[in-house]
Length: 141
Image (cartoon, rainbow, N blue to C red; front, side, top):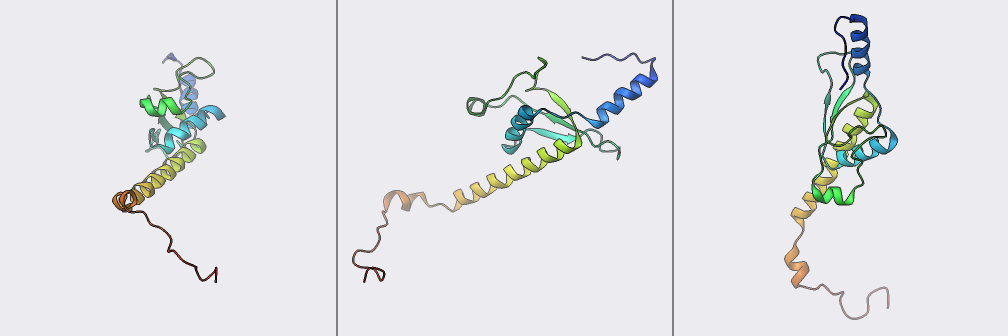
């Protein structure tokens, strides 16, 4: 954890300015966060919604459930050895907006999938085979 001496006001302002800008994830970590976002497994919110100058986001990447962890490759730590999963990250505006769009895209895809599932008739597909009509068709005549 970073410690800032409170008597140094200019240093404190500089540190706060850095947080307001956020930080970019590297390509591998952005892709991992995007996969979790598509699955709806992230928490993303503005760093300071009351400050119009602050465009950064808070990104929380929780530990994924076992099935997701078995299939997706997720780094437990970043390139500096700091924890990546299970931590809150201060993300810059551009990557935050893209993750929000990916989150939305994944949610819309899951909704479509659930709507298709709701319309699907398993019974007839399992117990009644549909065969093409026997005999010549108009194309074969």
